[in-house]
Length: 404
Image 1 (cartoon, rainbow, N blue to C red):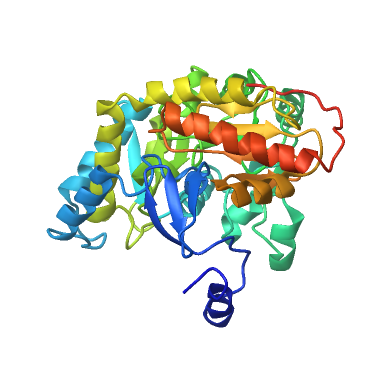
Image 2: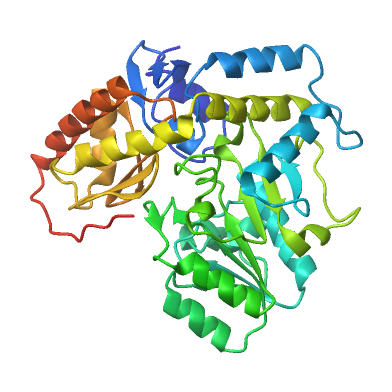
């Protein structure tokens, strides 16, 4: 099957839920190949999922070894792999002994779990999310994702959810209003909004206000967690402890897995019968996550994330159409001086580079933690060429540079 004929097959057999850019058939490291044999540099990483790149030996060997031993047993039983992963996540997050872990299959499921945590904390209080947020597409998580195109076909949505401007002023006004708040749910960096970090001091102020008003602070670290920002979790850059974090994407570097990790008293809210997952945390997924965490630690990949981030941000700064950079680690947003992100994405793919256009005027990159000088240089060459292709047709429009 070639790139030319796969779309007919897909239109016949798959639900039409979004465009697919190519038929990819193989990957190795930071590169993938399509059905026609074209090689691409993958700087989207499965949307911040492939922390170790494609076909990493540790990933492949762990899957094969665990699948040959024990792959699934349901939630009626525990496994050593599951217990090991829970202990690792608690240690990495700094929960202390009080913390607890729930293992699911995806970020959306982790956020659904967080919604139930908020309801158990205070059934009558509001759940607050931010404008520009993305927390998932299932009906509960969708209620926390205030994008009309996503929400409107499925109304009415979960009641008791409100959306707040992502500013400290709006946060303070909300808690000063006397409204009863059960939980504040925020992403430290809003990936789908163009990789927009929260304002400086936001999480610290959020922690102060939620604590003072008996509300939970729940951080969606589905995209930022597991080393993506150069720390294990983005909240650790702010010196606070939340009540819960949700995780997925890079946690198992491509194997489906999600998690919610709780801190302190929030760890006591769930009780038998209130929640569970048939597949969540099965021994195969858990074994892969343990191996991924170990590889990140053994190879010092968090330091590599920080170093390559600095290289990339410096390298794109002077390119045409680039209006700055924002984000942290290897979750980088590149705002453009014209609303041509889709054109840049297409030009990049034509050049052999995979990037993402989450908004009209921003490019998102989220490459593997394992990238080195060769991948950085290749990216800069291909991205510069794609920008030049597009800029030849567009005069620049001044924009304000935003940086983390």
